[in-house]
Image 1 (spheres, one colour):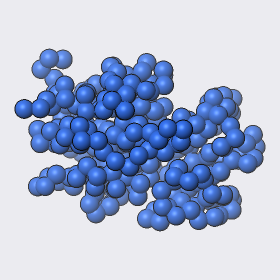
Image 2: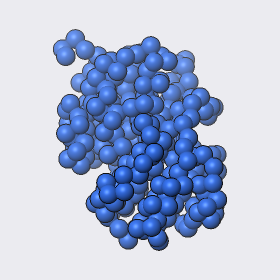
Image 3: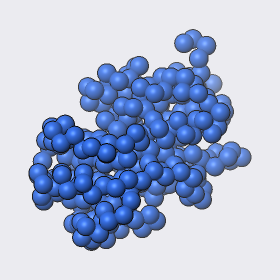
Image 4: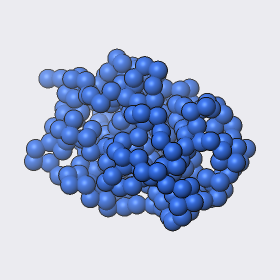
Length: 276
């Protein structure tokens, strides 16, 4: 790959651009200088920078602003949100593609085993509609208390199910047993499950963006650390796992960089967009 250089750089946010807060399911909302500079070198070299996250759109615009993206004179930023279910341009926030599904059966199946679990659906531009308050810092925006039946009464792009009394392994085992027919899912670092339309992932969202800007998957560099990055890392021409990623993420990746605390994203970007 000596003559290879990415034309599109897909970046996860939490655990890739942002460092985790010790002992919490949240990240520090700050971009370290090395990461900021590396992203800007890539942009200055003409690479399309795409943020790709499980976050909902309103939780991603602040990160674009921290990165000062798009750079002056460039087209509006492409962003893949909600694990690929929502694609938007920024600024201003303009949704250009959205996938939705009927989540009622999947939510009911999970709640049968975790009846005290927390459930959230995005209320765009405001925050989330939830059946009960999530732990502080885990959701962006306001939390609007809503009955479960009302939460999933219509088509949704993504549902979050969170059980602070369970573990990630509990949710992984449950999802495998249930099958969750008609729905795709991903389990986070904790007992946090994202439900999504079948076939929708960060990879499918990035494929939409890449096709639109005239880039092939082989020309994409993707960096991530979570189970919701698996499809993205396999799809990209070069998929890179952060050092602190769980084993299955390392297995899906072509390479591993340093951890987020060691500015691993900047280290990887510097291989292709070095300081001059």
